[in-house]
Image (cartoon, rainbow, N blue to C red; front, side):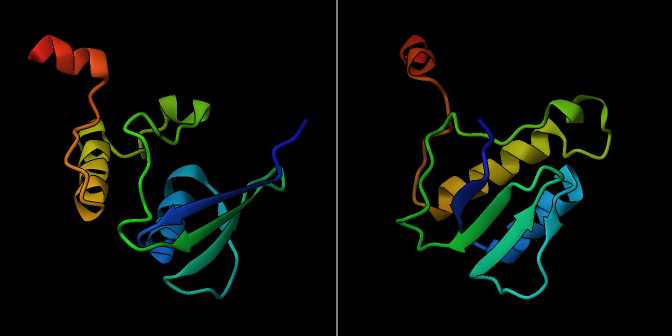
Length: 109
């Protein structure tokens, strides 16, 4: 089975497209705007990026994007930069959870 299409709701579709092009090598389709973008990978995956309102853009704290090939890629954002991006997304969505697992929060209590 092949995954052919994924849609992500984001705050800024253009900014997200540029990020995915830079760090994951995806190819953006010409056109679009900050509200709608389309990117492709080398295996014909179509990833649509659609702008949502803050109350609509809510991902679970464990949601992440990863590539097995990035482990040796020094151009990937640092862990600190990735955490800063995730924190910004949570603040924009009104979610103050820092992404810790439930078991971790219980241990900190």
